[in-house]
Structure formats: structure tokens, C-alpha cells
Image (cartoon, rainbow, N blue to C red; front, side, top):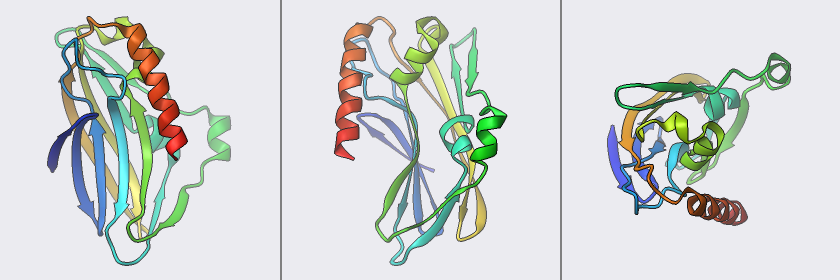
Length: 180
């Protein structure tokens, strides 16, 4: 599996049936390195074929339960998104199915470090070491393929201005959504 360092983290990628599937997760960050735009689990699928490719996935898995996060070096906190409530799941059991055009690119999951930090709180991050992994299944041309990325571990210095990071994150989020 190929790995590339970017501003938002480390990218791992693999090829399946002409699709380039990437996993973007964090990178080491000292106290002066901003983390407002750091990914902790973004899955992107890009069609490199000269023809459309049928793609299906379950949003509950890709957006939530497919992610696993471990915090801390000696003492560990593990976080896995709780399963979707059965009432919600009953209405959304269907797979998302579409044809990804040639050159088309789609995010099937997007998790940000700041979102998790806001959700869990500073105490959950212990000493700043984070390990992320992702496991799910996608169907490409009606064939199931397991997606497995990670574990990918990195350390974020927690001695920083979290209030400033949150303000930058909110603006980053607004700008990112406006660009869509």
C-alpha cells in the first residue's frame, strides 16, 4: 500500500478494478502545527477507467461503524462509533448505489480530528497518540471487496490553543462545504 504525506495527513491508497481508493488520516503535529484541517479518516474513491463503474456501499459502515480510533500510548481509550439505532437502520438498510463516471471522484467517508476532539473531549485523547483504522466493504461491479486501512498512528501535541483551532476548523468546514 502506497503512503504519501499531505498537509491534512498521511494518504494510503490502493487500486481495485480501476478505482483509486484512498484513506487520509492524521500526521504528527507539534504545538505550532495547526490541526484544524487534519483528517482522521477520509475515504475517497476515484474512477480511473474510461467507462462508468457501478459502486455500492452502506453509509452506516463507511460513515460511522467502519472507523476505529485508539488514543494513548500506555493507557488506551478505544472509540468505535456506536451502531446506528435499529429504527434509523430499518429505513436506510439499502446500499447507496450509483455509477461513478470516468474521472469521477466521491468521498464515501469523512472524519475530522477536530470533530472527534469536540465530540469526545480533551481527556479522551490522553497523551496525544492517535491510531486510526478503517474496515468496511464496497461493491464494485456487483462484487464485494473489503476495504482495510491502518492502523495508522500519529501524535498530536495537545498543548495548543484549542479555541483558536476550533475557530479555524469552523471556517475550514464552511469553506469546504461552500466549495461543493
